[in-house]
Image (cartoon, rainbow, N blue to C red; front, side, top):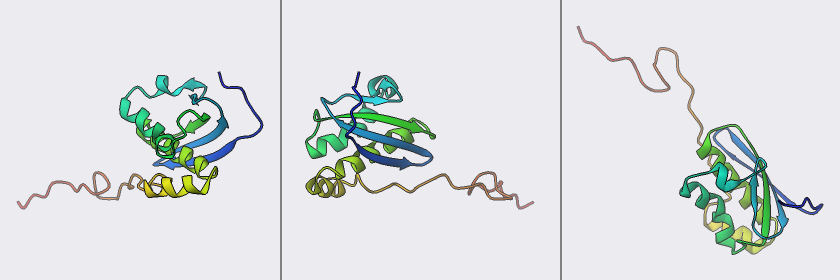
Length: 133
């Protein structure tokens, strides 16, 4: 379990409808998502790799503990939001981390969201089948 310390770095990550609030404490690399280890929450390997990518890029794999609260969206959106939040928090540590994270595209928010349904269509862009006769 991670001990709560007063000094932490904060980062907010967003993706689709998911919002992740990340607090980084100095520690040994434990990551808690909504009070549980992130391995229990994210079973797929690619989700775990995506969450750990900011730490790998900056070389801070076991220097920080992360306490994360995440709301909204699905599993993929939450995973990407966590990655974005961790990258934002790490960019406050050192200017060289900021440039490394920027080069790897981890500080850029992915602004793609679901397009709304339009009237007369079945979905956002799918039209009813056209019949000539």
